[in-house]
Amino acid sequence: MILETIHSPADVKALDRSQLPVLCSELREFLIQHVSETGGHLASNLGAVELTVAIHRVFDTASDRLVFDVGHQCYVHKALTGRQELFSTLRQFGGLSGFPKPRESQHDAFIAGHASNSVSVALGMARARTLAHEDHSVLALIGDGALTGGLAYEGLNDAGASGEPLIVILNDNGMSINPNVGALPTHLTHLRSKPAYYHFKKWYRSLFGRNPMKNPVYRFSHKLKSTLKQTLWPGSTLFEDMGFTYLGPIDGHDLDRLCNVLQWAKELRCPVVVHVNTVKGKGYPFAEKDPGKFHGVAPFDPQTGILKKPGGESFSSVFGKTLAACAAENGRVCAVTAAMADGTGLAGFAREFPDRFFDVAIAEGHGVAMSAGLAKGGMLPVFAVYSTFLQRGYDELIHDISLQQLHVVLGVDRAGLVGADGETHHGCFDALFLSEIPGFTVLCPSSFQELRHMLRQALFEIEGPVAIRYPRGGEGAYRGDTSSQTVVRLRSGSDLTLLGYGVMINHLLAAAETLEKQGIHAGVVKLNRISPLDYETIGPELAAADTLLVAEDSFGAGCVGQRVAAILAEQGKAPRKLILKNLGKTYAPEGSVPELEHSFGLDAQGIVTAVLEAREHEQ
Image (cartoon, rainbow, N blue to C red):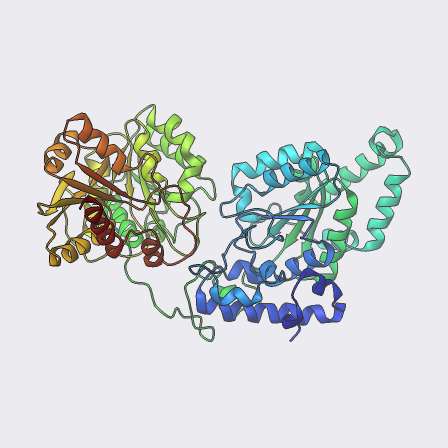
């Protein structure tokens, strides 16, 4: 196999042109084999095989800087840069990350997990290169979906005007900027991808010196060409108006043309957009037919495309069904999502109430602001969004919602540790920053039934902005419903109190049972609302605690445990011993949620250990 001989990009460059189609075929087989075992992002990587091979034929990513946008299409890049042997550990604890990570390889230029920032980052790198008098290429590889985020246009606007040599590769696998219709644009596309055209254009520009636009003859010919092209080829206008040289659209599965165009883009030494059309899921019929399903997929049978462990009901699906039921009862209920209708459980709502469903694409700040507008107009908007992506709408939460106390409901999905996607995707900040925004009510269901009731409370009972935070996946052993209370004692205990919220309550209850067997009587108190904290109830409920342990899968600074401790100290009821179990200041890596909870001492075993160690130190 050719792929087995590839240990670095130099090996890719050394291949004969006739070997490249075989390499691409082997790469697709490699991806299907490994992702079917570990899970991961499949369709996007299958579509980027030829493009990635072409990049490594033309550039040297050890010195040239390749900045991925989102980064979920980096698997081929990793396989070609010496990491094939690690793919059996993909997205696993201590294994290969599913996103670019500079700590893994010098070929990974920048961490990428969120969307729309690649052009901005790449422009910064290009400017740093110029200031340092270095000579290497800088590329931003951005998907068409990421162009729905406003930050992408901020970067494009600045980059196009900068004059910096910078190559933006637009991997277009579905969004049509402007359709090219007819035979002439097709012919021009082929013409522009031929080396002879590039050499002629380069020679023609050189006739007029280093700044040809100062020459009236060149300006006239350039304007004539641009006018004709904009008439026949409208798709290029947006980028050229920003100051880019536009090359494309190019067939993203034609290696010869890709290599020719990328080489030309490299030689132009100016801001360039290379527009590449690819097929998401290319080469795997199941993924081509349903690229959404195989975008981020759990382990599956590669022969049938069927998941090995079909998913059951989850907090997301319960949320979506409950919201649809609420919408059936009240015509003002609207649903908003940022390109995550399936992930947030809103696909059914979208089918049932299409007029009240709004997908704003990868634009969370816009999603928050638009929800504010819906609320101001008398609607009951619910913005379902992953916790990690809500971070990008932080300013709008304050400026557009909080200041006017608008009744917007946030369904904060994937709150807490989420697993294999790693540090860019864990939802470990929302409990901290939402609680600090004035006027926000933050609810934390621990079971499906509590989620159902809390969503109704948020819509029909609570005034002002409300956030309901819930984890990825299903509920644990706790199936109760205490949603009518803000603070509830689930278990009595005279020796210490264990405090938590959300699904962490499962570990606290299990830890209390284990401690009971060792003669230690631990009470368990659950917070259903972490903002505003219930001063009147927390004090009496926790006053008798000699030792208080607070467990939460968030970062430590500003955590609920610190806020509760401050309340108790204010009331003169501070516990003699306070134990805070959280992530501290450490980003959690890839791994399953149980593995990560264990590594941070947040599972039942870790909580028991923390209690026993504290008691030993006192003796």
